[in-house]
Image (tube, rainbow, N blue to C red; front, side):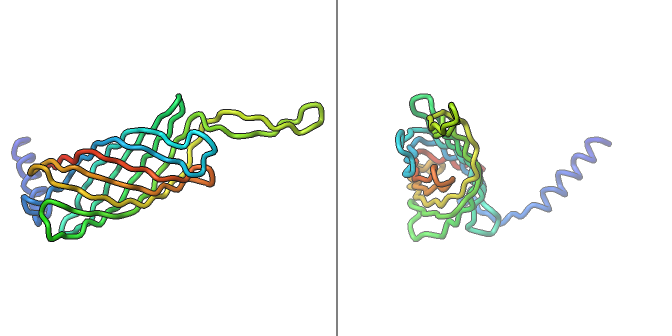
Length: 183
């Protein structure tokens, strides 16, 4: 009885899923790479090298991708970690070997060892001093990219991004790496 219920569920699920994608259109792609984040608003320690990972999920019957991502940048013990979701448009191209994409995203930034100035009152007199803090911010970003097909399932990608956190954390990042088509 249990095998029959499982078989009915599998057939029902398979019938409910849209089968409009061809074998040339993968439904998921994993992107792994490295790059750097450049904080244009920072007074010091502006450039952070780091790593990037993303999972691109293609929506059925569309050239739209949803992509959860994570980035981790570090320098001299300080870190900037970005995580969120992008929505990409990937228009059809005349070339089978090159594809372009663009989109926007939102998420969170976690910054450690953020240098800031606080004002303490010592002996009745305000005295500024620098401290290191950790903080979490909301983030919006704009992204564009290009993929160059190397094999049937592996591509090289280039991806510049504009990231907006707050008035002290706004910058650009760039990533280069490999895309692996799944499914």
